[in-house]
Amino acid sequence: MALPSNYRWVVVGNIAIRNRANSPDYAPEFSIEDLWVALNDRVRRDEYYRSYQNGSRLMWCEHVNEDDDYYHLILQVGDKDVSGVSFLHFGTLETRDIDKEEDEGSHYAAHILIGKRPDPLGRYLVLIEKVPGIYLSSVKDHFTWVCNDADYHKRVEDPQGAERSFRPVFELDGHQSKTVREALRTGVLQDIEFVALDENHDDGLDEDGIVEEVIHEARWNIKRRVSPDEASTLFGRIGGFAQQFQGPPEETKVFIRIKAENGQIKRSEVDLNGEEILEQAFVLNEVVSDFDPVLPQRYEEFRADVIEKIKAAAERVNT
Image (cartoon, rainbow, N blue to C red):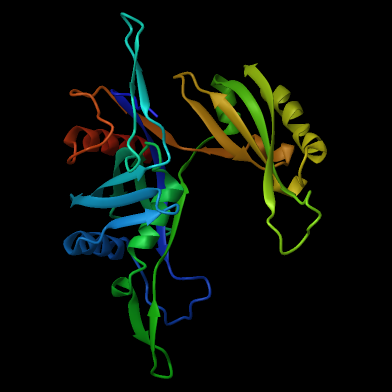
């Protein structure tokens, strides 16, 4: 996937670091500083590469920095399960193909900023430059891996005097932006997508066999402005359609997409209750742009201009 050279979307989220839900009262507390210590120590020990997806993907963070307000990271990802690339010459209309070697893969990198001061709920602001393979859940998985090493666990004595070990649990959620109702006031409703997951037992086996997951999809194309009343009527039909849709209704996911005035298309999963869809919200995304020199697909080091523009986006979120 090619990235734009002069702008990036930045996902705005909140990160919390907690103990497991069933942890005892004497369990130690965790904070963002514990993650920061683990990230730096892994760099020092040269143990920061994480292999996953059966060895087809690699994620790592070897660039770490900070200022008074934010921790700065460059998170990188490699993916072997990609094809080569093709370039079209706009003058001659000739195509140039670049093949991928067997052990090569795509390589993307993203700046991540994490605020140092928690909100009243103990969450820290996080801003993630959007590139393929780096998003809220993959960042959460990587932070979890970083702190899974026993060296970064906390040990305390329980009431009986035995030593107990605890590791942090990460929660990383998108910062909510406009509600669907607000987005529809100035945006265009693109479509409504239904995705259902089913299991195929056509071989006659219902246990101890290989179960094939089958995905059913349907889409309502709208592509026009709709009033709140029209939207309410339309969304009110979603539940009825989902009941007739292939696959168990409880496993049917519904997504809506709205195109904003600036051209950004926002996609949000919504509950099937049509009465409440208008009040549900999108994850906040901010755009940073006007870069000189242009942005590469990956970074050899921190780009000060990218960091400053992401921090400016954070100021917009907080005002």
